[in-house]
Image (cartoon, rainbow, N blue to C red; front, side, top):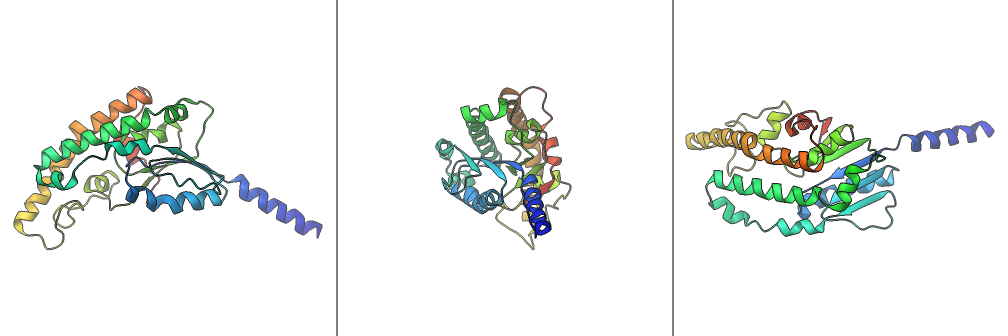
Length: 238
């Protein structure tokens, strides 16, 4: 009986000694982007992991004692884009508008007092960072805490994201999910898909990524690696 008790105590000690300190960052203020990850945060916290989530849609469940939510419902003020009107605009203009949206949104999130306290607290440590899989300044959390990065997406991956993780998608065989067509493309659609892929790469490199990198320098520090390098150094993509 004494041996059995010792084994049980050892088992419990091992179970709780391997529990991780996890940071989740889901920047997009949209219920559909947030609610899909609620079961993940709930299950991780119930298994003994300490979970901190930066979210616009907190669960506010008092029974989840291991879950800390940084409430950023204020980010919904940036969800004033008319996506139907955006689709009617020229593609280049729509991408610029979307880029400005992400810049304003991420600056609002990262400049938040509670988020800044998290970044600047030298005693804070995380074992893993889980970030929504867009090329945003939020990826810098993985470098800040020098820990593995897990990418999360409630959507299919963009063609740009697939290319960045070493799994490039051919624009004719596998058009980007944001395009209004798939399978058996016409000649015109093939040209449109190829042109869309090139256009996105150009705007990402020369407009979108530089604006996000400026936010990293402003709110994290000057010595952080490029966002695309952090993205490529992911450990898992869900």
